[in-house]
Image (cartoon, rainbow, N blue to C red):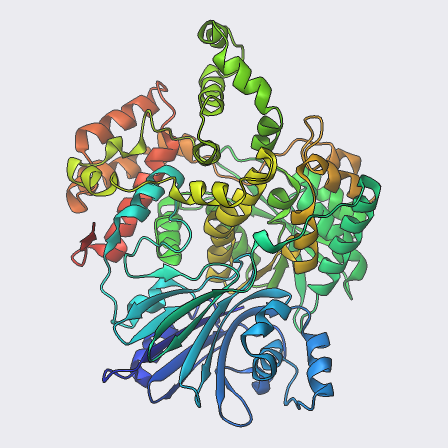
Length: 629
């Protein structure tokens, strides 16, 4: 993995080496092994290298084609590059080294943008064509690797992270009001939007063509284009097992040691099962335990799985971490306020590795492809919940409920909606329109952002897949929104902060396409999540893992905000925060804290997002902010 950046200017303000070096330096954590830039006329590109394949100088970037016409900067891995290389050699191409970047360069030389559909991997890249004076940007199918950009009057600046774009000094940071409204509900901006009004994400499966006459966006892959799979259950079980094993084997290719994060859950245990079989050596596995706070502890299950497959297992014990320091550090790495606190344990875990390995396998994607979340079961029983919600006396039944009446009431409210897009959205947050998260904002900020629909992205996805059943629509919503906008950045930023490459075999092209094409009835059956994946792994990983309950790898931020982080959060949001950024209404924020502290309301998510937002403003926007409204 690496960091890439670039600057194209068709006008008089041409990029210079100093500017490109400044941009590249902001990405040094993503590629600590080497930084270099290339500037020629209207374009300049920079690269920070994390050496994984071809550790020699022939793998360095920016990389120039033999004829001098093409220049590439590349972040990621192309796992099928050996086959592509053989195909290109048969066409007469000759290679200087053994990197997948060089294969990508020759592939583009041979096939142009159609080559992106051929890549099985995770990548973000930029290629400059000197003879055509054109720049191409591209991103992998499901958005594992990040790529953002800002268009200029006659050009573009881009980077793996927003900090590189800002370092160009060609972009004035201003807040995107629509993105802020989304953030208040979900903890991040969505789709193309970032919290910076001028900076946009390149969507997964898309590529941009930049030329003097303007910008052209193209889609080379999307879930819409995946054909339905009509296999019966037993055939699907065999196919999933074989495809997952092939994906893991393919992603073990590396010129440095490969390890795996092992939580003891179904997804990570499945990866370790196959990786331990095909890795040339003894696979290193890593699990984490935290001391001093109430965390989910999966060390015993992980240890059992490691013993089953004979891995070189390491338990990383984290104690005494300064949470305010970690929180502030992660705000800087994310470049945007980020509401998923699961980035904290992942960041601490990577730090504890002390660069023992540069590459780790990670289980992300398994839940979204195979139906791992509770909301899929709820939607599977949609008629039941919708009927209960409309039944007379539902309120009395709720009050007598032995479980959590607030949670059940929320479910009934959601299932009583007629708007399927809104239902999908509200299943992904604890916030509701009846008690909106914007209630803690100042009147000025509420006026600026409430004119925008925070659920627009969900309605768009729901409309795209309106012919699918509700469970399948939710799965596709998560693949198009939750995965690229929340979970993959949650993995990318903390791992790359320590110069560690995370690989996600569940998102392999062949496995992902097959899983997407399968009907939801094979994934969620009779109230069981991941029915197909569990059946495919039966007899391979322990039954205790397969039949155990899903715990997740989160952080107890709600408890922190009542305990160890309460003083810090109050200081940021009340003593200095409300006056520094102007985001919040002091009285409303004080009530939010008191209700949470006294357990009258569960406001942990809202307080956490507010804390992240204020810190982001402090580090990125203070004295520079202009509001885009």
